[in-house]
Length: 194
Image (tube, rainbow, N blue to C red; front, side):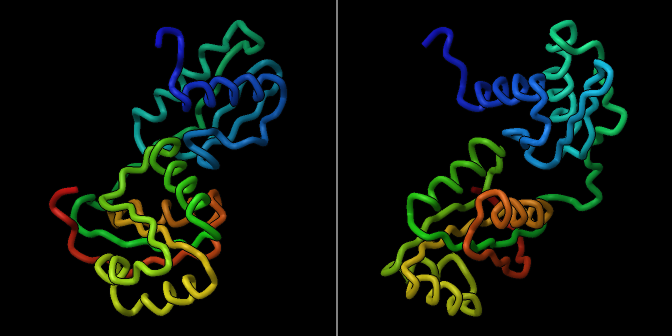
C-alpha cells in the first residue's frame, strides 16, 4: 500500500520525534540501549556502539534528517561500530528463555526478529506437552530447567544463534523482553544452514 511505512520505520520516526521533544531516555526501537542521545545547545549528540558500520551510517542518516528542524548539528564522535575479533559462523549457542505464556513468548520472538533484526538459525516456542521437541533442540543437561518451567505453566523460547552474538541476544532476552529466566548452553559447532 502506497504511503504506508514498515512498522519499524514508523517506530523509529516516532522515537526521533520524542527525542526532539526532549524525551532522550527512551531506547531506540532498533538499537535499544546501544544508542544514547542528548541535545545540548542545538547539537544532537549520539553515543554508543552499534553492530556494524552500516548500522552507524543508517543512524547518522536518520539523525541528519532533523538538522534544520530543531537541530543545528549532529555530533557522532562517540558513536562507534563493533570491530569483531571473533569470527562468526564457527560456533553456535542455544539460548533458552521462559515466559509466562505463549503470547508473551511470541512477542519476544517478534521483538528480536523484527525490531532488533536478529536472525536466529532456529527459533521455537515450546509449550508443556512438547518435551520431545525441546529435547531435540537443547542438551539433556538443560531439560530440568525446561521441565520446571512447564510445571509452572510457562512456555520456553529456544533460539540457536551464532556464538559471536549470543551474549548480546541473551542480554536482550533478559532485559528487553523480561523473560522469567534465561540460560545459554555451551557453544557447539555451527549449523551449516538455517
